[in-house]
Amino acid sequence: MAERQTIVDHEGDRVTHRKKRVNGVRLHYYTAGSGEPLLLLHGVPKTAYYWRKLVPLLTEDYEVVVPDQRGFGDSEMTDGGHDMETMGDDAAKLMEALDHDEYHVVGEDWGATAGLALAGQYPDRVKTLSFLEMIMDGFGLQEWSFLTEENVGNQRWLWHINFYAVPDFPEMLIGGNEREYFGHFFKVECHDPAAVPDHAIEEYVRSFSQPGGLQNMLQVYRNPFKNAEYFEGMTDDQLEMPVLAVGSTHFIGEEVETQMEYVAEDVTGVTLDWGHQLAEECPEELVDELREFMGGSGRQTGPILGVCPEIA
Image (cartoon, rainbow, N blue to C red; front, side, top):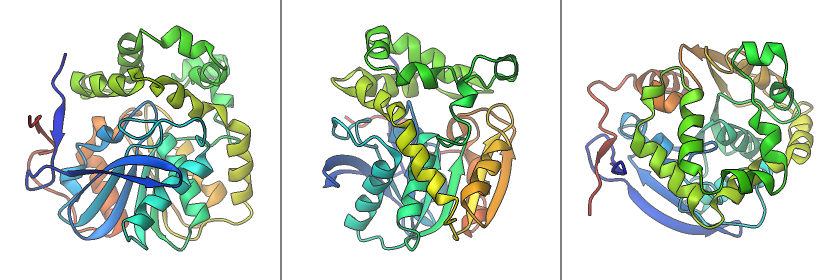
């Protein structure tokens, strides 16, 4: 089994791990750095570990807050609340508990739609929103799951959207095969499959192999109509804060920008020449775009210092 890595800041110091009960759920999160608060929200099937390469590239100028979302990683398992409005509220309540009144939000995949829901509920708190590699429920996500020649031919066939929405069967079929299943799943969505190391796969498998882990992950996919209703409401009251829409050439691409134009007034679109797992595949390139957008001080130089052997 590959050794789990310790997440560190730009000086090589270990991030601070904590747990806090907010919005009826006990969330695990880690913090590092100083400066403007920056909330990083992971997608599915991932945990806060996903951001480990970005953390040391940001912490010189930002105080990063990186939670495991409800039912993921080391956060508490729950029987519900996996719709985007509730998960966005979780993150907002966490930032409030940490005394952050205004902050930047970066989300990827389902973390992007959770961040979008947060911004919709608390627009006065979100300074900027960066929306990475996702399609909203009600705006094409389900259509991308259809078995069509176009979807399969473009390598964008999101077959798992409908599969995960079926109660009970995914748990039965994936349970006991998490390592084989997720190991394959991550690499298929990458343009550079080698970018996701074995220790990352092991960390995600650990999350979804624990009691309730797989069910909590799948619950994210079982609120499509509630999510769609919420996001459709945002088209009438668009976001006013700046929004960065980041797509990848070899997965969702320019559609990410189109998605944000439905719900936001001030959208900047960027497409990076990689696959779906941007924080794994191109962390430095991604941070360049985020820093420029959020008004940071420019590119961090030198090697990525985001991982070191786990401290006993």
